Length: 439
Image 1: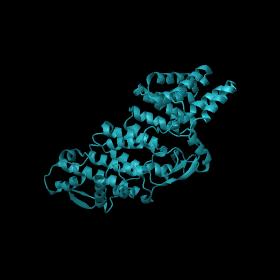
Image 2: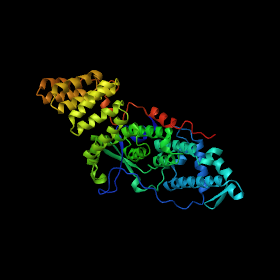
Image 3: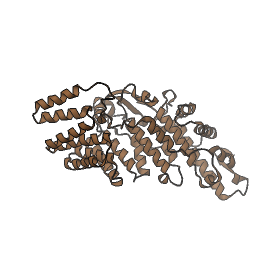
Image 4: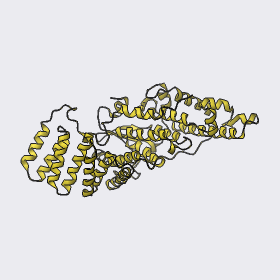
């Protein structure tokens, strides 16, 4: 089990992170918090920027090292200041370079009460002449995004700042029970803002796109709904035509109406306010999955989830058609199992009980020890009035061995794609910027 799983899961496979509302009247779906207006440069802005750049350069991606700990202790005001200082310094040396070095003033920049040589600033930021002329901080901000990704992932609790605004609090719950609060969800936001500085445009940068996809998958893996809501909203703004981002966004809205999320809202209604609207979230999920399928028709999982959402919204015929296409187009066992399971549900809703029975048996043939399909077969038989078959299916369910590995059921992993290992996803996150090194 990885360090983050130990921190967030605390012995359970069902810890979910959602936003906490300050009152029942406030929205319960997490929203991005507007950045405060820029403050005047700190008197120690240069030293602070030096320390941040040094941490970015020295951090070993994937390591819970001293640079993760020191960066985790930065306050929201510190991060806002670092970003503002970085942009201000960049803009000043670009203007100076464009004017040409005709005199001493053109070889220096003045900011925050300091006059600094351009050569020293470029050395600090690790920029070559071409990057300096274009104001291109790409390598630095990408390395910075890796550091802040690791801070967000490891989330070392002993170093959390205390000045995080209430609007940024999130609540953690486990199996429907409140287990604590997180006061430090600011580093994902800072990593996104760093990548907004990529030149010529972040939306044209494949590495930035790969980072958004990999981190979105990682957040889904961790049930981090509060973090992924603003994260994927920004990803859709930057990459509106990316199928993977549309797909992950659909997964988020689909998960918000899952039983484990809804049950927590019901049990903690006095703290959380109203639960996410089932119809609104399913409508959003349908739109996003539809868009993902339009962009990439061959992505079977997007079509699988579209079929399930259509079924949940009552469009059983269209759901059955989409799910049948999944079964015809993929050889991946988890997707085929879920496709057959959901197809059985859709056929049952249409009154086609024989077709439902065939679909459930198809699922059982793929994962004969999965619990959900035995339960589905028992329920189907019970609804048909076939008590003997219903009892036989239930008996097969109770007779399954208790070993967790032999009982693998893709339905357990549906909302967080647990078949994707943390280590693989993290390698994809950190590998997105593999070329972003100081020369």
